[in-house]
Amino acid sequence: MELASNAAVSRIPGVCPHEYGIDLLDDDGTIESLRLADTPIHRVMLAISREIPDSHRFFSFMWRYRGLMQLIESGYLNPWRIEDPYASGGEQLHPAVLDAARKVTLDFNGNFPLKSFEAAITDSIKEDLSIY
Image 1 (tube, rainbow, N blue to C red):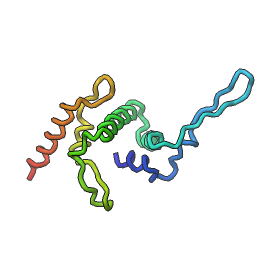
Image 2 (spheres, rainbow, N blue to C red):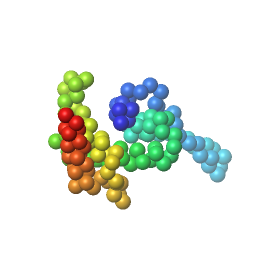
Image 3 (cartoon, rainbow, N blue to C red):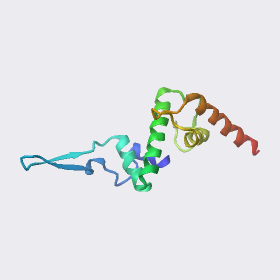
Image 4 (cartoon, helix red, strand yellow):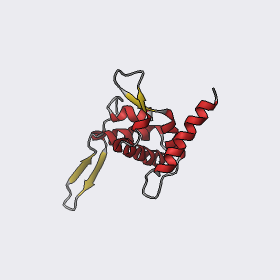
């Protein structure tokens, strides 16, 4: 997840989406080049594809990443944001959120079911507290 976050904000050298794409041969013999736009999600996809060459594992991660980003953007995860000790004024998600994203099954539309997701966060926090 750290790799994905760093790629999204351009912190990874050599991940240049505009260098990737396809060339299409038109009927008249001309070649049309299509390149990826340099967007955060394309940088994430390229960085993760280097680390996870297995397509099933790659797409599993990307669907979970998408689901997690939707929850972040909606504000649903605000109660589990904590101060980032390494970035002044920065925030990070409680580790239990990432644990839930790893464990909870996505629904048919690629979303995390909210009740199951919140229960998994609560369970993960309880497990962490039980070791003390």
